[in-house]
Image (tube, rainbow, N blue to C red):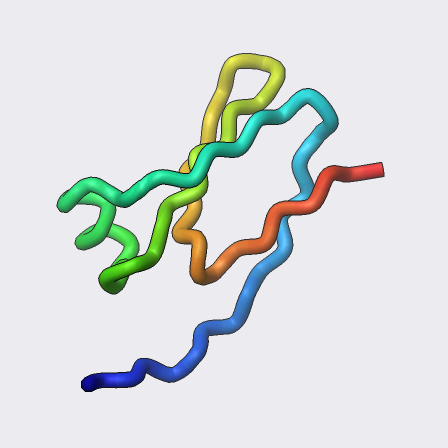
Length: 65
């Protein structure tokens, strides 16, 4: 068993009306974000139609306001 050091968690503020979905990362996302087994990605869809993708082990999302 290999245990990695915990990563610092960054808080991201999201606007009301934003939706968030957790899902397994694709192989490309796993490589791009250096994601280990068992870590989900957070798919963030903003009210303006834009979106972001965050590794679930490094980010905490909080609704602004």
